[in-house]
Image 1 (cartoon, rainbow, N blue to C red):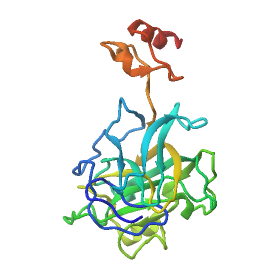
Image 2 (image 1 turned 45 degrees about the vertical axis):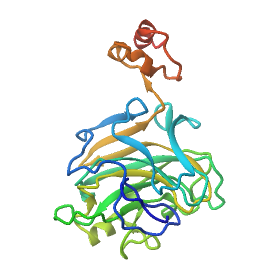
Image 3 (image 1 turned 120 degrees about the vertical axis):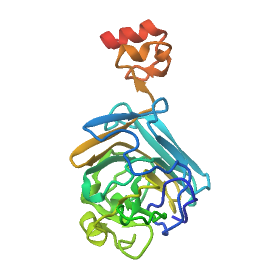
Image 4 (image 1 turned 90 degrees about the vertical axis):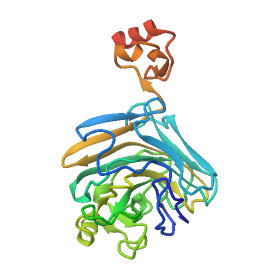
Amino acid sequence: MKRLIPGILLVLSVGCASDVSAPAGLTPRGPSLDIAPLSATTIVVSPVTPNGWAFFDDNGNGNGGGAFAIGPAVAPLGAGSAGLNLTASNAGWALGAAILGGTRFADLTTVAYSTYRQSVDAGNNLAIALQFNFDADVTDAANAWQGRLVFEPYQTFSGGVTQGTWQTWDALAGKWWRSSGALCAQATPCTMAQVLANWPNAGVHPVFSGVVLKAGSGWTTFAGNTDKLTIGVSGNDVTYDFEPFVVAATKEQCMDGGWSGVKRADGSSFKNQGDCIQYVNTGK
């Protein structure tokens, strides 16, 4: 990866150089969980209910994009997923949210997500990466941009990213690399235990808070998807379910024109409020 443009929230993936410039795009947040208190729950992220998540061009070069989609195949959770695609090696696209600011990595108890690669990769290594905006010590006053901590499946499972298959990665048990500095560099990734040995109070940046799912840079072309991101803090899990639409589940969702923004589980739309309420009551 070449660079980060100031203002979004990201940094790197396979075959990228490190960058230490401040991120741009998503609004920086202070120390908090930002979206909701962590608990054992599922949050649906869709065009209608983004819940703080957004697609963005991390490299500023275009040549790709992101969108929610049905499938592909049978998604790990719900009907759909989040898709990212690249059409040039200078591209880098991501889906991110300004959440978990100030959370220590030592307090993470679950970090897992699923990926699906549609495009061909001869080495079977390319998959959407999971990244945290990094702070070496969330308890001190040094709040400059400090890069990202990046998990890429290939660094733990070399050659094990299968095309056309949903795979779930236990990122917390895998290897991570930092986008700036010599320790835990991309060429020498670290386990989370090693990360914490180097930086005991490391965590998600309290000012540039961010969790990012990214494809690129240095990938010639790519098309892939991600879903069912689960992050647990001190045993309390939140799962993010990426969907192209919201399935009607309560009568309240059908009221006051809400029926036009929700759908059946198969993606079909409702004709009117009564049609929506009938579906909620009967599933038909």
